[in-house]
Structure formats: structure tokens, C-alpha cells
Image (cartoon, rainbow, N blue to C red; front, side, top):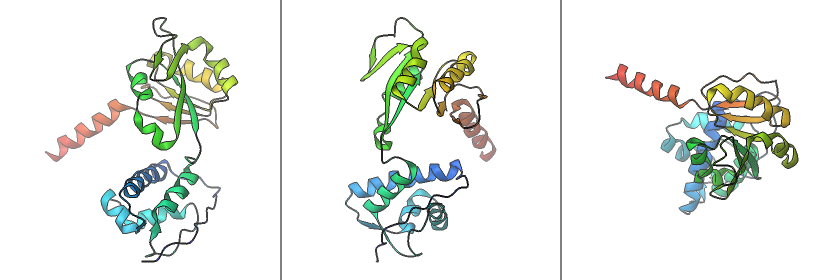
Length: 219
């Protein structure tokens, strides 16, 4: 099996779908597992057979970002990992803050998977006086009234939003005014924010409802 030469990364001006980016993360996780097993060379079929994705989809996803060799040619696992990380911006540390240090927020801070994508939650914010000043893992909880000044001072650009639905929009507005450009929203509400701010919505109730519905129609 031949090995690809150095992959060329080409930045495209059109938008890449969120589904493609999510699949790239899935490819990366699988490749990291294979690297730990000592696998050095892998084919698109090897990657996709385990992930239940057609090899053609894998090659198409990579093609959005440039040339990665000819069809049927193997990939060097370590090089492909580095290339995908560079494409996704995971080759450098991303700092984030957390708004809302309740049960969900606390679980996110302690989630071990963030280390695999080079994500670091550097501070948490809440309005509960009993939580302010305490630490979750190594992350300190601050008064949410100071969230704007902290963002501006630290120049962080990513936030996790875990506040109640009735306060989500106002907190999101304050995040954006302070300079946040990307929000992962766990509140069950649609945020209305300016263009240029990317919002990823995590609605667990909707996802569970979707699972229950499909379980119902297949029984």
C-alpha cells in the first residue's frame, strides 16, 4: 500500500456544512484510536467501514479542504491526524468560558473529552453566591456580573451557555457585546444574535424526542 505525499490544504471561500465538520471530528477520533494501536497506514475503507460512512463520503469530505492523494492510496495515520487538526483549528489551544455553573455546566467542566480537541474552559460564571469563588476541577467560578470584563481582558472568543431559558438571550447578548464569536447553547431557546456570531444548539429534549419517535415507528 502506498503512502500519500504531503497533503495540500486549500482554503475554500464557500461554507462547509456542520455535518461535514462533525464527520471530520469523528474521523479524527477514530484515527487517534488507530494511532494508539500502532497503526501507521490506513485506507479510506478502513476508516469508514467502522464508522458506517461510505468511503466516497470520506473522500468527498476531505476534498472540500484540498488534495489528499489519489483514490485507493493509503493515508499515513499520524500525518492525516495532524492535517485534520490543522483544518479544524484543533492544532492550537482554544480557550472558552462557561456561563451557568449548574449541574450541566459542572459536568461540562469535568468532561475529559475536551482535552482531545484542545479545548480549555478557563473560567465559569454564575449568579449563585454560594458557588462564586469556588472551583470545579481547576476552573474557578466568578460572579456573572463580571463576565464582560473578563472576556475583554482575556480575549476569549468561545462560550458555553448553560443558563435557564428565560435568561439565555440577555446573557448571550452580553457575551457578544464583550467579544464572544462562538456560542455552544444548551438553553432550550433560539437565540437571536448578530451576523458573524456562530451558535451551535444542543437541545437534548429534542434529540431524545427524536429517538423516542423513531423507536415508536420501528416497533
